Image (tube, rainbow, N blue to C red):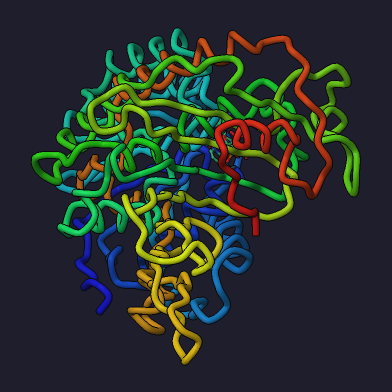
Length: 480
Ligand code: NAP
């Protein structure tokens, strides 16, 4: 039942930052899995680029090691690994200087898709774009893939968009948000727009509220310096969670077409109300089993939030009156990313209060146990009279597809294949990113410099986050 594998066109994919963490942990292992799956063919090449110095053989050895660490053992087939490593080339290039650019230009083949993955620090995005053009490495059909973070605020995002636009057309720019590459996120669009069942209920009349949670058990160790400049709002809410909110809240696009989908997402962001300061809770984990946030960040007086919860309203006909609650944090009690859509009570109940009624709930789980679950009321089976019980209807792909389901491409693989196919549907457009910053900037400014509330490691965040819900007569879903 898994969709057929259709090989992508031949490509030259240049990975800038080829020796970095992201390339070794996600990008190259993902490309290997697509090679193993038959989607990346012998006519494809991956050209690693970094300052080095490094030879092709050394990079191949580095990637062989990375595959052994980041690809499941049963997928590591010696002949396939060897075949994949043959597809790799390396060139020493300096994004800020002139070194290596002529070599790279000479390596590019005619008649194949050219793509350039910017897996480097964001301050190199502009210099790379400029040199790709100046040295005739990229042409008008080439694609560039830009990693997060895309800007630090509206002003820097605008500047970056303007810089990229000097060298590349918007149709060539793929701003990656790996949340959009998840199977379940795409399944959400299928469930919403390929069924008649949900859309009639998908509005303020029938949806009580929506909870979007991205909880992590890890802290910021290892990337404290970056995180301390960003915080939960910039690192998670402005981008990943905003994208999830858009997919839940958007109107049906007229067609499943990149710009039609992105137009609808943009309308959602533009319809967001300003967030009231009293609807925001910011937290910072204190010392517990591990170091405190400020110790991990190396900034004793840090005011950066490692937890954020907020209530968001969308002012349009569909959603006016239905709150969306967002919650994200580090060092929490469980690792969970999910969207939960809580439906309202039926207008009139014919059953006794004691019968056990609970609301219908659609849970879209991104991790762990990716899948979708609709909770519905049925009669409790057996002779005990009319008692109700809520049971899950499992709509997750893994079960429905049996063992084959476990071979799903991960988010990065899927998105890189979309780049090669030239499909921008799951990538953020420049105006979307700017609109998200326009909404986020005032929220950040309202709390800048304020000390976040302390919370215990392994908890669900500050108690004030529970109070935010209790105030509205609601509770967060348990983190588990
Ligand atoms: P990293 O481990 O620090 O690697 C940086 C890479 O860039 C190295 O290969 C480095 O090699 C190369 N580089 C540095 N300066 C260069 C220059 N002047 N010219 C050419 N290459 C240069 O970084 P990373 O963690 O892989 O992250 C890469 C990007 O992905 C960043 O934008 C980050 O925000 C984003 N990202 C990372 C993750 C993650 O999990 N790591 C997740 C989401 C987003 P040389 O020093 O040899 O040049």
